[in-house]
Length: 219
Length: 200
Image (cartoon, rainbow over all chains, first blue to last red):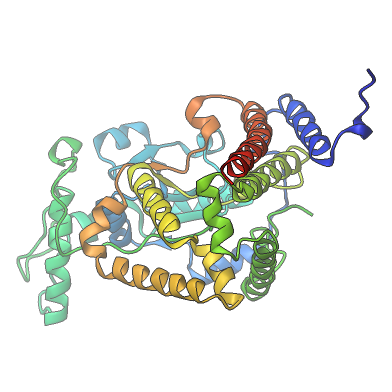
């Protein structure tokens, strides 16, 4: 009996085509990361100008408290600094190792360093490699300490400032920090020592931090 | 030219909305033509008398999968820029069950209820009203369920990453599943039809 492809029904022909494509696909390897593209400097300048690439320390604190998993937090400092203290959930990646760290181009990546310079430079490196969602923690670890771990109340605080401070004080305690609530007291010249051991990994989330809705995409 | 066009800045936000509108109309049209504007047709799926829903959905899945996989392998689509919904395992399983229950009770899923409402079906409009009411309730109850909503977070994972297999193997396995499913579904339809005849 002769079996020709033309004698099969359309459904069977399509099925056969599908199986053939799938079989070829077995040998094609990893489809991720094949494409290359040039960088659009005008677009990057526009992003920098509009500051849409910043995440504030308060925002990041909020995400951590909510236990969100839709971003990756990258600590660009040395392993020694990282070992001493890092923001919960951070991965330690040296700036030279960014390309091989298995970051996906569609990952939402939040970078931080001590100040802001290294993270800004890493931002450009990643953007040049077409990573789409790269963000910088505003002010780096320095501002994280100032506004999340050790928030301070201004000497002549307005009622609104007091409410904000009360909220931040709770967030601060969640991360094992110390709110500086003595009005008029000078900002500690030497920031209290940061050690991971002092920071409880999980404390009950403060009630005052209202979780935000997560972003929806897809169907 | 490399896709995804929007992420590579081929067009801006405004044009992207126009394109989304055109794609949405096209999607609705395809659903309607497949017969998905009728709750009878959709419900028949659950009685195994008409497996169109299964066939259309699985066709869409394998077409998109094979298309994306080969376009990416040829360097035309940059897959790493395609958005992946992060996995929150337990809340998503629970959400899927709720959607399934709603589907069985109401005869539609959210997408097909829009199609039914657009073609003037009253049950579709009632269903759509239910979708809106449910969304409202969820938003109001958010402080109570918010913690659960973000529970068991796994990040953006794919099956090949999770099970340490190659993408090609997964594509091939899904294709075999689809082809087997199509053949099986056709057989089930015939069997149910003959059972119905025997009863008549």
